[in-house]
Length: 336
Image: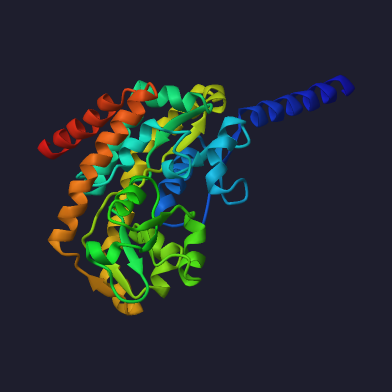
């Protein structure tokens, strides 16, 4: 009897150990608060947990693991297994994907943004560069074309942009600088304070960020049609953690990506539909930028594109190939 009891206890303990060993728990580093920008990550977490009967869970942390400028560093040392970051926060660490942040690329909707982002992510040069940080691209966080909110009188001409202090990163910062504005790359979480304190006159964000970070609450005007470009913010996973996943957990993660993106797109579409109401509620003037202003900035954009290709080529990246991939992917997406 004593032998049977000991054997039974050992069996229970052995089963518990196996069950615990089979469970996978990942930490995910993002920032700010839950918003349209992170909805695909939450959808991914739910789908993965459901597909694995709760054996694979993603713990999403808003700023508790790292700040937004250090998420890629955290991935590189295995401080957490998944993270979101934006290319413009550290362009030297993710040079290849900055092609997606060039101004006036001609991307007109979120579906096209997904297409060009994932095409670029799949390029070997991007995979190689990310591997230097022990990171692997999982999915994009597609954002619409950025537009400005600002305080004081509306600014909608090249002359009025001259001297304007604007929160704009990456290629957006360059295009505003080309017409005399003074860009600054304060993070999204710092934008409200910068605008409220008068450090900047305007902030370039997508709609969800103007809402989430409160810049729309203190804005006097919003440019409805400038659409100079956007930023690119991938979700990445630590390569070692990914390769250590059991086959079924890895399949669950990979298999949940497309549905997570579809959920993101549907959710963002709802936000766009109610954007006019947001402006009206807050008394924000909707400014239509004159065509001649947009044309002047578009003319400057090609020089920025050419400079990017030359600079990245000199650094050993297949820059022209990456740029051409964006162009061809856009053409293909529009022909479907």
